[in-house]
Image (cartoon, rainbow, N blue to C red):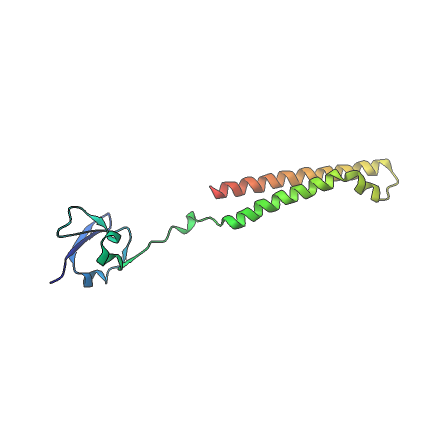
Amino acid sequence: MGEKYHISDGKKETGPYTIEQLKEIPLNDSFLVWKQGLNKWLKITEVPELSILVYSVPPPISKQKNTKILYYKIKHAIVTAVIVFIVFSLENEILSLIPLHYGEATHWAGFIVWTAFILTIIFSIRIYRKNIRALK
């Protein structure tokens, strides 16, 4: 007659079982096992003849982060802010290419460029903060 094993899932202890009976039970790596001759309960993965019967428990899906997608979102926000900054820096050169006949129209064009710059920075910061929070 073969070895007899007692198992525990952390909530209740059951057994004794033979290896053949344990093959019918879905055992994961969180189980503890005891058999005659052991001084204490061991993780089931520490008992060589039982470790082949164990399947690993995958981590919870909600804990995993797709950091690659978040990285590209943050990168996109930063690149957008840099592009708008460059456009803002070249404001006078861009405005000189637009044939404007009124001084006030130039003022409003500058205001629009400034507003676009500020809004892009605000939205870039919001996207950055949202994605950093998601990484935590």
